[in-house]
Length: 304
Image 1 (cartoon, rainbow, N blue to C red):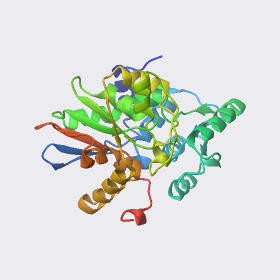
Image 2 (cartoon, one colour; image 1 turned 90 degrees about the vertical axis):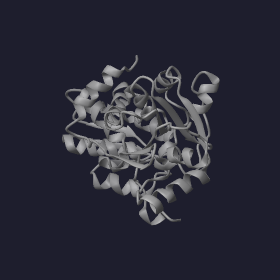
Image 3 (cartoon, rainbow, N blue to C red; image 1 turned 180 degrees about the vertical axis):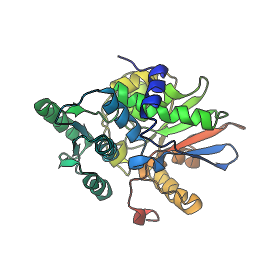
Image 4 (cartoon, rainbow, N blue to C red; image 1 turned 30 degrees about the vertical axis):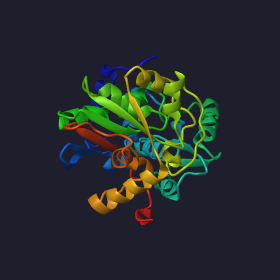
């Protein structure tokens, strides 16, 4: 099973009426933000959620089911409500109160279980087998990956001169989708927290390997290993992998607010942290796009 550029283009047509074409912002010569944090449901995840559900055709009466650190659950709940279907969301205990409140507001049935995403995913899979609900995976389904790639299609139209795109990685759904949606010759840089280096270690090992999950990005980038489908795409795409410290992520998030008045969660600031910290150093004249991928956070913590 694989995903292609044609799948991403088809997804773009399928979800066009359901997602926002998010804007870009050039903050300095050669540095562009893709403002996906203003997307419906507060993150890019809604792209994959809509594509997965719309691709399924007739849905079972039990609706859809998903496991999530928060953002994917919000996206699935949003898409389900928009399409008039039931949503059941399993989340780990580390899920932020802001994301839990959002899920409740969207009418999802919520179950909190386990300390990390993988425990919630196991419980959701068991429940889906019992009820027949449509599983919507957080990152490792073809339709989800293709949906996330629609972000890159937009970016290539909005900023055709971009040389490099920086994107945060958890399970790899966004990065793999973006890699498929980019124009040939555009480099992808995958950015992970040092405390959750799933893709980084997988690329070294030649296959997905389990990692410990901790740190400020855990509620959104907390996959214990990169998805197999996503890894296959990324390992064949020549992606560059870099790691950033929690301190760099926290600093990037504060600066996005203080210097640009942009509200993002910690995971949403990870890609920018790679630029600010020097984990990724552009060459002279290189034009870089940074994906700000999520904003489901408590605004009161922006200067904390």
